[in-house]
Image 1: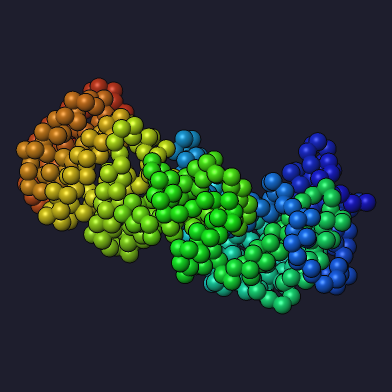
Image 2: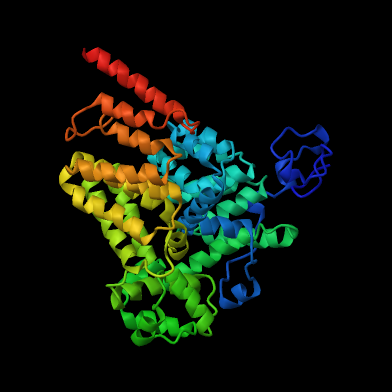
Length: 516
């Protein structure tokens, strides 16, 4: 007797086995042997691969499948980051898990964490942590994958193998030989094989496609090898990946292929179509609506890459969101390298491009998020820029004019942003004015802050901090009496975080006594 993944679970819960007790110890009567799922690899033989147009025409991809989702996550991780950022913005979910990811301290930690089944939307952060230790983590994951049958762990491992330079096609082929007992894991490994060149790969994918097609009619396991076969054939036909290929091509070649898929393209048409559009993806969406274009698979990817390449060549003065996303990411990388000045310079350049188009309907961070179609979170980035500029001006007071300009431009262009963001921008402006040597102007801004936001203690705290030991600049002499005066303005009113005000007063008193 055996139990299938889609059978009702033996425990009586009424759920499918794969959604309930899969991975737990089975009662003896339900225990399966390897041959209950798949025969040995050498017994599966469907002849020589014949990957012609007729084969792919007869075997269309399903509209949705696990294999397709995994391949998309591999090729377009920035799309996951965009979705994840939006979900966090709207719900605040996944934040606790993000803190756990930051604390992962090595290969063993990473593998243990993956076996817990992290949320898929935290993939970019897990990937980055994995890549810090991938050389040491890969052998551990390969060993775990020899017997893995947990769907989430399999999916995570396959995606991370794709990211690593320390996984080789021989490793994946070996795992395929070992996974005769778990069809789902084998299907996902087949997706990964589609990105490798090796004499044995085509035959393996061909055989498992046909085997799954014949023997797993209730599942879509055949989608894994089918997607991989399509990837290999498309890649070979084009000679390289689309993005690299397009960079090397001249405009005529790109335009010619666009015409093949139904897009009547020339420079005049292109410049007209980008009016009012700020991203290559939105430009492709416009083309699909406007022209008789029905791109599928690599053709759809080609249009996206082609749109970006022609945009760079025909309208280089107009930055599109995918370019700005790359610049934002380079800024994050610079800050990691402790190159704060260069990072701020780059991000202010990005702000200049956004500023040029923020007129009319864009009046808040929420509007800007809707207007922006890059892979970064605009909501998070604009506040990260505020923080990094604040750090910069405290160490480099000569940068105050351009730092102050950003805070003022933000308030002017996006006045309908949330009160919390506007308050933070105003307090950052006040700090920058004081760092730049204009104490009176800075205090004027703090007066406006406490007048506009009288029920938030942080206006009083930040104002008092200027004269307390918390202020890191030597441009303002410490004045504990004056600092306490501003702190006490927040007391006795039942405001949230009042305890933080009391702590500052208490700590400041200790500092004063220690100096006497």
